[in-house]
Image (cartoon, rainbow, N blue to C red):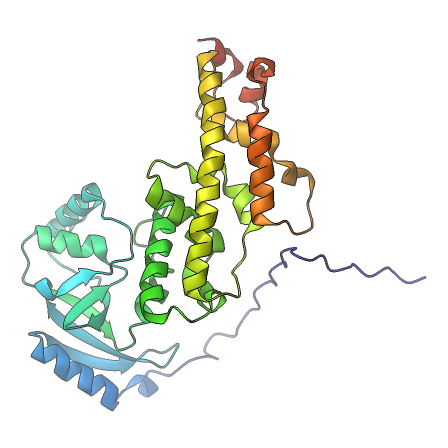
Length: 327
């Protein structure tokens, strides 16, 4: 008999196909083809000049073929998008000091024009550093498509995101999109939001800034998917799921406090409690309902007997050595 075919399991994640090698020089525009006389770019250049800036050049992006304007913008007309993470003032000061030592600003911002202002989705810290130095102008690549602001946020690598920063960024984008395009499907914005659990965690962080999403990440990632709902309905769903996660967190915190009262000290106490009740660890395949699963886990946490916890159990979570639990 031939080899049995593997059955598709509902809800199981598909493995990504390996990236195929592409021959160098086989894709995109040639340097000559990036020359642009597009009316769209010319019109944008005129608006930039009317805003007090200078259009220095225009070209077509060699990958996507989109018009781009290299411009010098008045710095008071440039601001971060309202969706992205907050600045790190320490990082801003370090950048300002480095720029002053070099004596140059060589990394243009990416911007989109919005109501006479210029939103930058990827240069908040560089912008902050230039403003800290009291500069009058800043170099930018101006793109005509406002949606670029959302897309670029997903690619922002200026300063690595942690889970909280990325989650808050996504939920802010989500809310902004609901206001303008609330009837469109959540699933259509997957490339922008990157991962579905970011929106849910973002809603949780808005309500509880000191929420520890990392302890619940493995569970929530397993349960989440982009939904075939409108953004307006999807936002309500994300907020409802966030409330459930916060109720789960409340019960986990109670157990953590009880463990601390017994002398256990570890940065991994929450992880330990969640792992103890996480039955998904033993179910490698299959799909699970979000609400039912979180409710079941919450009920299980409420039954945890802290008297039966041993210091070796905590140590196995990768925290402090077992002896530390006695200190």
